Image (cartoon, rainbow, N blue to C red; front, side, top):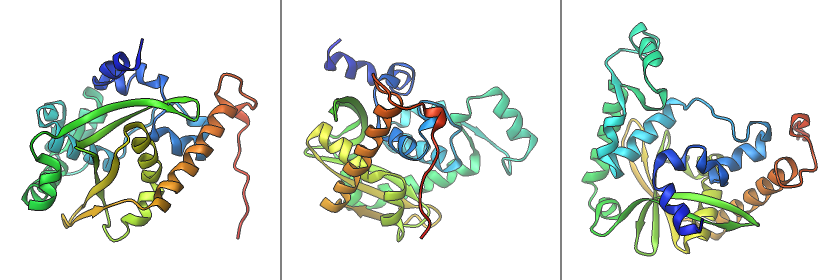
Length: 246
């Protein structure tokens, strides 16, 4: 199977996020491989921030898929109504109605911004574009939110727009830039909205930010080869954090 055939399969979310997609590394693996390689390849429950982020992306880029989300009319996630819904539905698509309404306001705020909305919804823009390629002798995948000419724009939500420059490294957006720019040959920037206030931000990437991403990627690859590669040299069950206190 050549890369074009693989990319065609990766257009389907079931393949991209499912068993087939696990044949390729992605930026979401980097943090795990660096900080807790024992959890590599294992599923974890999405946080509320992740669920709302997913709803935000879907509402902006693939609104026809909003039907996949189940909205529960309950006051909190501790109610029996919500707990019963968790038993019946896929929790990856489960939100309280008020949580979804908060995101709907964020989408509206982005649409009302004349300059940024052009980057997201102008004519000829491509959405959720899968990409594939080799980095450090391993195959990597990615899915670009928005490809607009020679630019990639990625949508992010944040609790603090002012602190985004710090959280961007915490959540490995620097390595995301390194991966996506390498696989596409395009420049990547972030369109960011702050929860609660709907303040908007546009963040371009410095060479220092990119270099930080490449450093993380190299460390992740080193751990992958060490614990999971074709000739692993260490048993991942014996992994422990070895560090200094300053």
